[in-house]
Length: 338
Image (tube, rainbow, N blue to C red; front, side, top):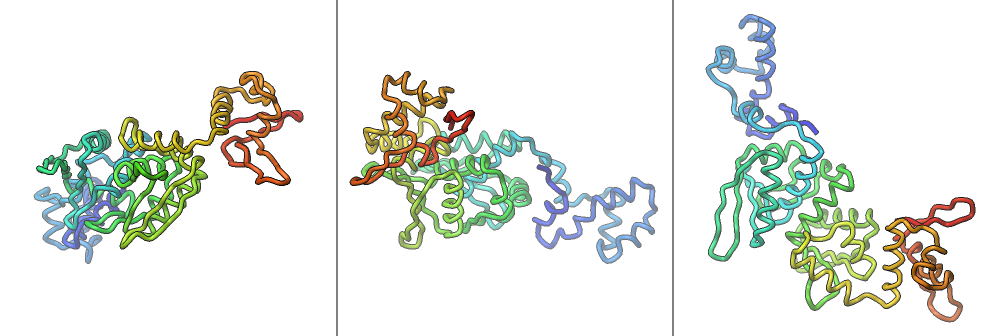
């Protein structure tokens, strides 16, 4: 992923619109073109006084200074950290009208997580303010906001936040990192209920979250909650998939509460299914071998994998039917994998 100067310069106000042509001026000077010819080439794009000042190195436009002072090529590790940064900005952060980047939380480890991601990508330090209420507030310079806007579009303002086409086209692993940060901030795991919820003002953002969850085979329900939209993930299978594929940060109270909920609503037959899953994950792929390990009848293992079809009672779905386990057939033998 690479930052382009013209796109970066376009995030500045109209006062800096001519700054887009500064690299062209540098190129003309490097090619030993005289001032009058450069003046003619850049006519109607850069004023004579500005061009003269640039030509004699008397001034450098702010967008170019900022561009040269920040990272503009990003590694895989940087892109991973950017997912965390964007997720937190969509959660408890934001970009002000004056393009300052801010993030706040009462959880110190989330403040540290955001600071670490910003430090890893941009080597950026924040202005930190702690309020009497316990809220920690971070504020970063405008050039960092401009980089994020250049890469991911106008995804955040002071109040409104949205999923841009640039965010939507990112790979699923990146969206998972974004969603974990977002759920860490705005997700909820009520102690008296059996679901994970996410509340947002913007309907399109919550619909995008629901769509992304569905891509990971996690079903959710959407309801209106006053002026907000509430997305709930419920049911053993969906909660288990959420834990395995997204989850909250390890050791976070929300993650601990999610574990308690999953344990509380687990049906007895899921204990056997979880044992089967564990064996499959450890490379035991044949039904006969699984039955031998668990000291169970092979037909019972078949039922847990493929479900039980009943005439007079409701049929049940197996791990294969639920999409948790997949099959690969080799010489009439089913090999199971996840």
